[in-house]
Amino acid sequence: MSDRGLDIDRFRRWVLGDLVDNRNRGLFAEWLVGEALGVIDASLPRREWDAYDLMYRETKVEVKASGRSQSWHPDRLSQARFGIEQKSSSWTAETDQWKQHGRPVRFADLYVFCLHEPVPATNANVADPNHWVFWVVTTDMLDQEFGSQKSVGTRALNRLTPSVPWSDVRKAVDACVEGLRTV
Image (cartoon, rainbow, N blue to C red; front, side, top):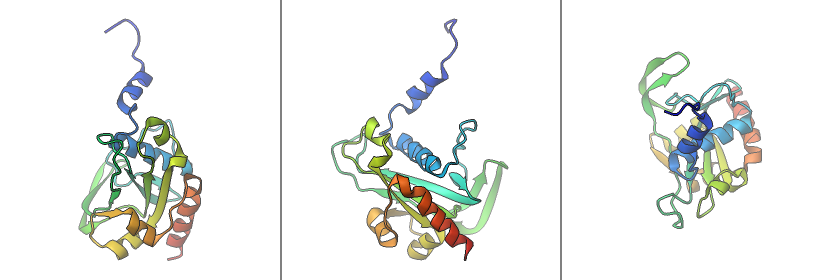
C-alpha cells in the first residue's frame, strides 16, 4: 500500500462506474425514486437485503428496475420484466430481525417500476431521469391482479396504470399513499 490515503470516491467509481449493468442500473433506479420522494439521506448508507427499499410517509416502497437494452447485447431490444415474487420471510435491517409469514406475501405497501428506455443504454442516458418511465402500483392491486405471479411486464403494467415521467413520481406515489390511507 502506498503512503497516500485510500480514495473512497475512486472505489465508488470502480464499483458503480457502469450504470448499464443490471445491478447498478437497479441501484440507480432505487436512488432516482428516493430522490424524487426526497427520502435519500446521504449520511446513511443504503440497506442491502432489507424487506423493502424505501420508506416514504410511513409507507414501505419497493423499487423494481428493468431496461430495454442490456450490457451484454446493447443494440438488441430486450423484453422488460420486473420481479414481483411473494416471499415467506422477511428481514428488517433496522431491527436485524427475521419475520416468518404464514403464507408468501409482498412486503412493501406499494411498488415503483422503473424502465430505462433507450437502446443502446449508455452511462449518460441511464443517468438522465428523462430517459426513464415509471409505474406506481399498490401491493393490493398487484395481489388482486397477479396473485402469486413472479414477474410482470410493461403491457400488464400499462393495463393497471399509466406510466409517468420522473418529474411526476412523487405525485403518483402520493396518490397511492392517500388511497392506502382511505382504505
